[in-house]
Image (tube, rainbow, N blue to C red):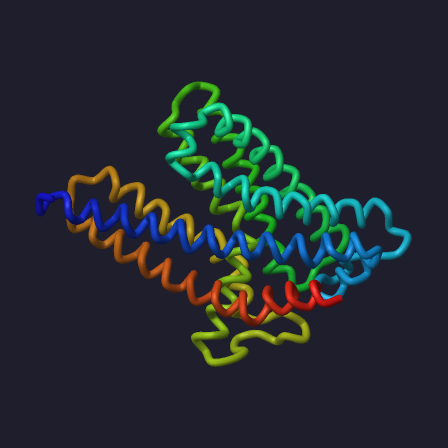
Length: 271
């Protein structure tokens, strides 16, 4: 390997590691959603949603409960569907599966964004207005990225389509990044800091409501620009940024798994 190719190799290796850590974390989160919320439905106890979600299930509110159920189902489905879309070998070996899965992913992302907006503004959610605005912007970005990814795919501008598809994946994962980011923040501070857990408000959560999608998007843009650059220094800097992001995600996933997701999985299995 020539010295000129080492920075590019480092950048690509960092990106692969980021993907593997993110994939593992999202699969665990998807299993958590299925076990907790799906398990509650299977046992005929939808009120159990309320243990981890404000107004998760309201007796008599059929339309609202249906919106929550659709949102949760889509969240579990798109976690796996989005990961499949990013596997290069799958795109090459099974292009038809990539196309059909991509269409389902786009539809699921759009429906999840719309149902999420409905749940937040009409049904009620924890947090304050600043957080709700930040999360709403995330949902609008999902709609924008889905449109752009579809538009460029239909026009056969594949390189542009892939860039928008990556942006869509990150925006759709915003809720997941919020949870992972919060757990990482708690771990780095050695406990709760910068917010009130009773009201779920505070500066830390206000920042996280926007960082949940802006930070991953900035890392992605740095990677894409460095990937197209002929400057080794930019590639090394981008590789370091991606590795730093991977480390923070790994910490958040570990803490969330041990402290939040795994107890619900084990508890649900024992009930």
